Length: 156
Image 1 (cartoon, helix red, strand yellow):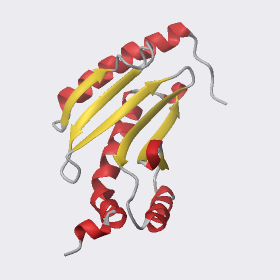
Image 2 (spheres, one colour):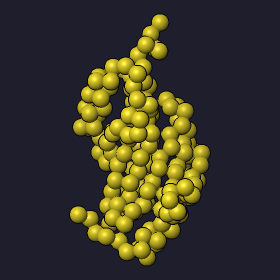
Image 3 (cartoon, helix red, strand yellow):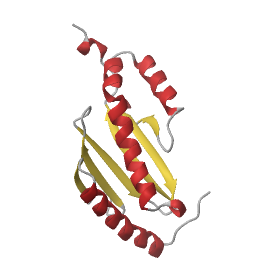
Image 4 (cartoon, one colour):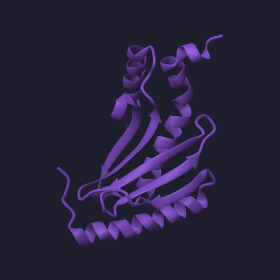
């Protein structure tokens, strides 16, 4: 189990994340917005990074700071209308090749891409890697996933 960070250490990390994300937004042309969420049950440790894509119009990565880990996630697509078994098999096979993230099924059977890392290893490069992994993975596989899960919309 990872170490539990006290409130002061988590607050310090939150300030550092604010700075890292501001720097990331300035240096990354696809970033459209970075902001702190205000609707996370009054908690301060939640941000979003919204990026423009080529394959998917927008990818929004949510970052949540806990007392042990930093969780990052993005919504990929709604539940498939067809070929669900083929889509889920495809996602599981992709999970085998992913590092630092995994596909999962969330609310209303929507597809998400999620990851988590211990706070002890959190630094600017790890945060950049986490956001970049989610963004690149969505860009790489989004249209293919739609073609499986919504095949009849792409035929004829």
